[in-house]
Length: 113
Length: 114
Image (tube, rainbow over all chains, first blue to last red; front, top):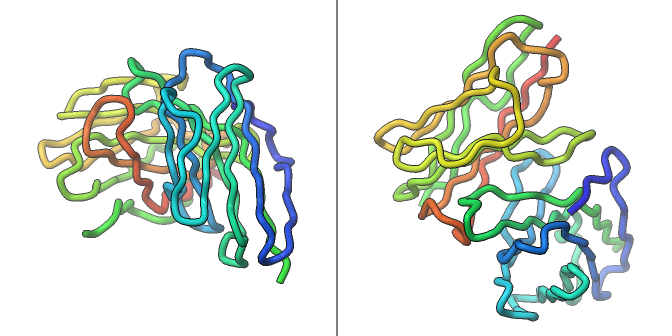
């Protein structure tokens, strides 16, 4: 993913609505993708991951979609809650990279009550 | 099970000094990775240690170094601090040392260089 620096894109949604956060990744060799959530003053928290042999994976209230053709990843959050307000990062790695993650610039999600 | 712990949580240093940060991984995890987070550059990989050996290294100058002990605890050191080293330093641990192992992050050490 590309860093967007100081000005994080912001997604503002109403409580109860669904949220979709997008990420464009850069390395066509990447075969493992992760979404992290980072709340203020905390480290990134694992949400969900997906391997390149899949195009969709579901968790509790979250779904990750992978489109390898256009190198695009998305995170869908169902019934967004105020506690979902945070910065969301996508990360990518590939088989020979060990645990070296490349992070996207992040998207700030704001949930309005 | 306790999460990843990092000490200290906050640190203030002056230019030219050196600093050592510590990370204790989740019990049983053998891989420890370090990342630097700044508003300008985002999250960037520093290095990864597995079984006391550095497996990967990011694009940082030699002033940044690390090590891992036999109990998997890890330290990173930054020598000759520069103002631009002010950042949140994050440690992540993983059960295995290869790719596709879920990494769990600690709360970070916030370093301010004056």
